[in-house]
Length: 177
Image (cartoon, rainbow, N blue to C red; front, side, top):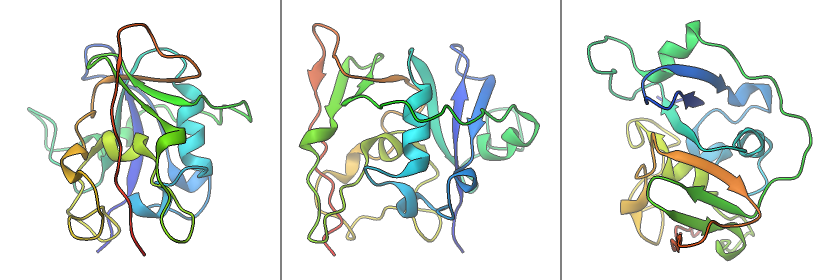
């Protein structure tokens, strides 16, 4: 079956949920690779709320349970606050990881033959990937698949400038269809 996702924002301690955004408020694209594209309305809504360093997880409903719990982050959002639509404000050029001091310049992400470019934000912050239909799978993409999920729970922002001393991360994943 297909795995569904929600963007979950965590408190700085990394455990308490401060809010979440569900993809169904922005269209019918519930599975990871249905919405993980540059220009997707749901992903842009998440980008718009990341104006200050915020711990982020693209939480799948098949992800592992939280330590000491029988629920994962996706299911824990059922009692959390849904973040209202942030409106139609511009989104930044850079996805910035303040814990790893790295960033991805979205203008360098390569599109596939039909013009779609994978958005780095959901792919880098995902938990539970590979456990359901619609997930990003090795063999279905070219590029460095080991990047998937490496930013989950890190403090992320999206902005038009990068802090001094941060290093560019090459995000080279392409679905070649």
